[in-house]
Length: 450
Image 1 (cartoon, rainbow, N blue to C red):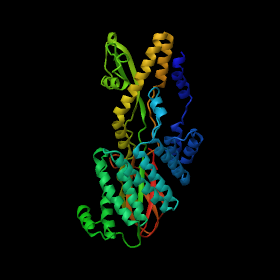
Image 2: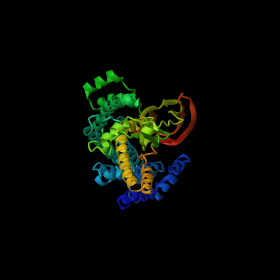
Image 3: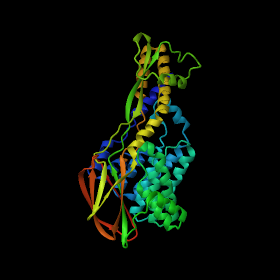
Image 4: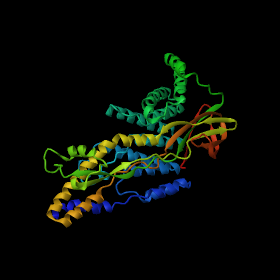
């Protein structure tokens, strides 16, 4: 019994770990009380800060207008993520006999990039454009790191971030940086468009024309003008409104159970040439296979993360100010990035999960040989510790749309019309006293949860 005690002890440790109830976070956001969601998360902060919780804390604080607290949470998340790229050997090893939930979670690449978007907005709302520039430069460096790390990088989230940073640099009249960011946005959107389904917005091309003209880059200006057309000039005493509309929720990871039969003819555990990883690759092809009971040695159950589409009711936005009407453009499809990211990781996760489950199976088999009751207890322990890693940034929106429209300097009522998939208006809201300054950009973001 003492040989199996460490394995059984893990059960009690895992069952004692309780997280926060995400439904309570949702209620606070949907009822227009993001500060309640933030305070709930604060009260349920884990003893050791973890990335998903910091992301949720950062975004709920952002919507509650607690901008310093939001930036602090995102900064903490990024520090943990950077540190976790140096893997913890002990936790990696432990995960092979327990659960993927004990593996260090560094966040997905697109999650890390989106945290810089919200951090930059935090600084903008505090009137600190210099701070927003720093966030954009950090995001740009992070993209370059991802590109250098992976020859098959998928560019998820990079087009939107480069586009956003181009606008921030433009607002600060950092024209060279703006030009570079818009040029990167052109490249990144095109690289990811086939998978994400988000084409490069026309605004990127128009911005390249406008900024290259501003910089007197004659050759680039002529090339971009022929390619994208001349953007309409900004009238005298006009400024711009750039509104980011964030709709719905990104799909949450769920747990699904898969079954794999181990046959009596399999030599796993007896043949030294067949280790867990090798046999896991063989077993992977047997998912859901029906086997006669007489041939079945053991039915292996494993838990895997899964994600299903969760499109919101609102699939677009139309903004009107007086007689001027502008349609929002989809610039970031987070749902598609989330589903495709998990899909790309499926085989690696499955092999690792099967290898872990096979390790538990061998422990069970040895325990059963010693004692039938002990075998049953160890088998139960294996079942209880088998759970999928469903960690993710759950408060993220499903999609982000952008409206960029010129407006005369002054204070305006901004009318928002939310559209369904057919383009029909299903709900309307308005923002009062939005101030537009001459030759300046005013940034806003607005979120719905339906």
